[in-house]
Length: 350
Image 1: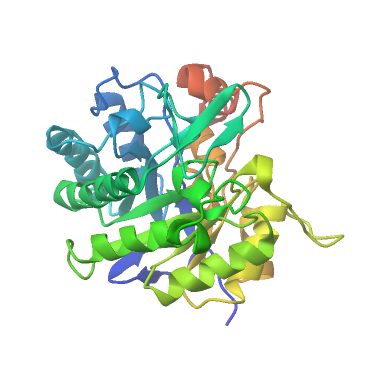
Image 2: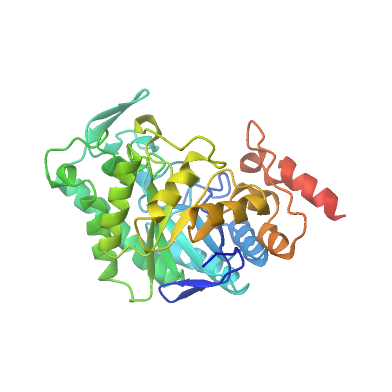
């Protein structure tokens, strides 16, 4: 059956009102360094939910203070953060939209002076120290406890952050993870034990998915990871880039979208769980075309939603959406009021 962006569908028991997802995008400079939610976060996600998206996945929210990507990143590492996170879920749910939270540990690319990594690995001027088994188990427990807090805060599910060079991605890439134990011989083991631990501690209808690198380092590896995760009960696969310094991307000549959108389609051919595609999807025509060509289940529209929080509603109604203008330096991340795409959209609304 031909998929439409307006289709409803469900992930476990969570009803999704259309096939447009606002993917996780870190909002820098809004937190005070404590990892606690600010009023700006609540209003940001309320606006996105009001704008008609079928699903929102909250920005990477860190499972330990030491695992942060930046000191102003949101956190979910202590119980005191639950109340603020609950403000976000209540605001989003009041607009009729489900919300998952992406839980994250940066590993070697984080702020920690002594960065954790599955194996000793040099990245630029930073060296990751090989994790002991005890350290691995401690971080796994941090992910499991973070998922418990997410449930307590009212999220409909979590997305494990398994791409973009972060810790979980480092385990999955065999060029980064050269361990000689079970966590190296079976790179998925780190993730599978987290998934099993979460399942034991949250209700059955709580969604657990993963943002997964497709080229890890090759598409063949990404497909293998996807199939293993499906076999162990993952609820959805949100496909993006993995450890970019150690990947081999591919797409056939003439494919009209990004290589990562092609990869999402190839993974969808191999699994039955919902698959999301992302990157470079700027217009409603892009969203419809990518959905039809790849037969994935969800289209992620990130930058377009930053420029126009009503992107989904406008697209579904056939109105002009406006979109990200691809500034060389993203002004939205510095100060949303200076975002050229948003300023253009607001001008057109007057």
